Length: 240
Image (cartoon, rainbow, N blue to C red; front, top):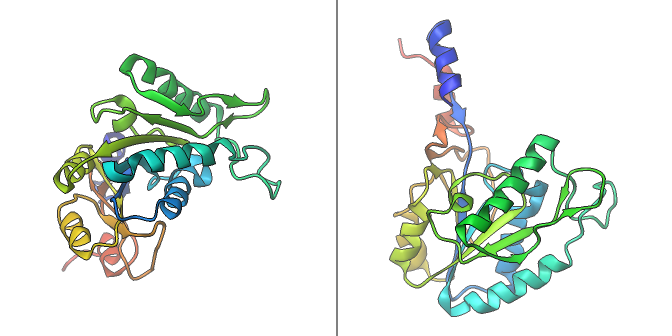
């Protein structure tokens, strides 16, 4: 971001709109349908190999259903098909480049120094190409590198929470603020959490739902400016 701002300042002080990284969470409450939310969480982190700025890379599950969720998400990942993206049976293709491939593996390796527990994955697939197994870690503390940095790959961190306040605190404990998912059938919980989270996009019981009338953009180190909606026009206008 700093390089972009410097380039803009050193040329002609042009205004810029920056949509940068993310470390987006999905918060799963006890009243959620576990089978449905397992599919939602996996889609949120594994579509496009995790190379999505709004990927659900942090998954927070309330303690009442945590054990069931963990068991089912690990079992489903074990049958995840990684390989040739032109094969209709394949669910996940290769990472974009060797640079990105090596970066993801370095984060996976780094977790050994931080004490996170491996539940699934961690291996590269095959001897050719940049294929990585879906990887899930638990016992992840908020201060860990894998919980703070945007890995931009098929790596999920899984954490347990007890109260709404704890979930809100964990969600906001990041330098990013792009997107957040909330899974609950309780309207009061949904309202309380959405009003307390510093994120530009909040989905309730869904993911990747967009409309051209709704703005896209985030808070904090995600950048500034907005895409879509009337707010996006302000990026290209000057008041006179």
